[in-house]
Length: 226
Image 1 (cartoon, rainbow, N blue to C red):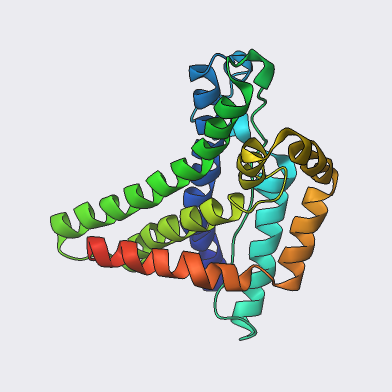
Image 2 (cartoon, rainbow, N blue to C red; image 1 turned 120 degrees about the vertical axis):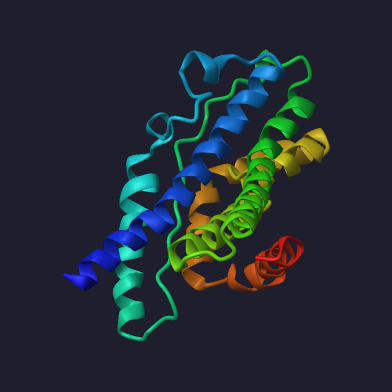
């Protein structure tokens, strides 16, 4: 019973920051697209903080839950240090032809998602600091949620900035390329998800996390004293 209660508590602890991270990420894309003249996401009800509107059955539910269950029991068996949670939401539909400057505007629409994750990482740090100042100390649950909130948002920001289509980083890179190069590069989008999966399975993203996410995590904790 105690093990099941711990499992459910951890689902909440990790699930809340993850759902907020992917929800605000997608809403930021839609909001920025609307600012530049494309109301597609707004008409489909995607500029909202209601996570149900952004849920992808696989990426937001099945994959994170399956990954967490697997890593939870692996951590219990001492095979890994701690359970892990990761996922994604339904991409917000954007029609660049509605923009006045499709290339430049799409660049900012793409950047809005990772920037929102950076803002959320800082917001979690501020929440942690305010709670610490108010109560003098935090229980392990709140510490865990605040720290995971910072970590998952930094992870999503870095991951989405990979220069691989259809990730945001790929869109941003596309917007800077000369037209002929951009057209050639756009052909790689059909293989993008396969490339991402191969990188994940091969553990090739580990060094990237160590170089960017870990230092960023430590920097924010140091700045806010949490």
